[in-house]
Length: 123
Image 1 (spheres, helix red, strand yellow):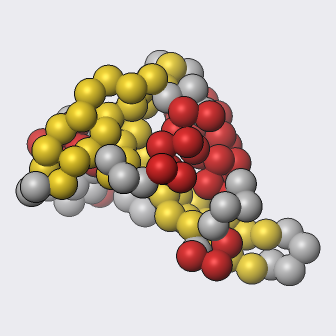
Image 2 (spheres, one colour; image 1 turned 45 degrees about the vertical axis):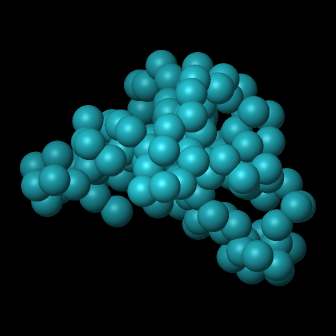
């Protein structure tokens, strides 16, 4: 995690990384990253403000939706009005997670031959 601009390496973006832990057994189920801004060539195009991953054995249980929901609260408290979240065109689960959390489809882009969808979430 790099939280302060003055300690952030050049060509990098300050961020906070959160680990999602299931309370009943203290198992890590996922991780989510909040990038403080997207004034970066990759992040402004296809990386976005937020990236997340859920352990393969824990998918389809609602963890990604809840992780993103809680991270959006943090983004708003941080002072953002909207965030960019992207996903691969064929990642139906991530697409549903983003839309459930208010994602509004902006456009599809091609990056290295891959189809990426861009969504904005107003906070």
